[in-house]
Length: 209
Image 1 (tube, one colour):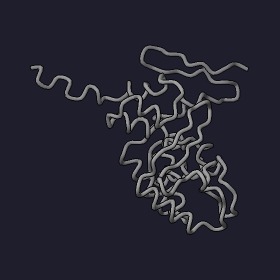
Image 2: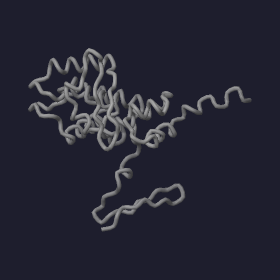
Image 3: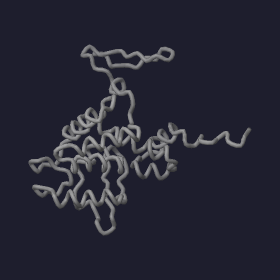
Image 4: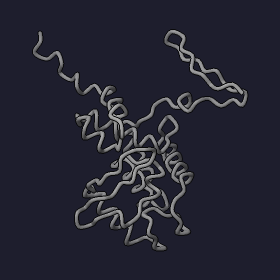
């Protein structure tokens, strides 16, 4: 079986497809992050679900802390220090663990979720049966919300992590702080977001003419 290869022809991109017809993931994704108005529409769509508070908090926590799906489903209530208003983030894929502050609305939403959680669980996000969410369930949840929000490409949970990096870089966050937020072991992964941001070029020519 041949391995899919990306072949660049001038400004066009052509994909060599495997006999099974599967292309690399990048071939199916027009964009890896959400624009601010799309993020708000995604949140609104999740709030309209039957378990709207829980589903909205899934996306909000993923976004605020740049979580991968596996990192989200492993969150436990004892990871949260309510007095200090912090949450312990356990990273995967060789990334760096860290302690993040909770935003006020996030902390209030998580407290409500804990009060209303039935059945009680040590995990923050659970299914109706009381089991910790699976990666598949989170993928389906976000993908469906993206459709309901009428976002014109397939939204996957990792979009939220990319949206965090993009939004913070565009907002002027320095690379060192962004590295800590994203949990990157290598600064090279962080600088991809910084390099794509137009923020350092803002007003570059003002006063030069």
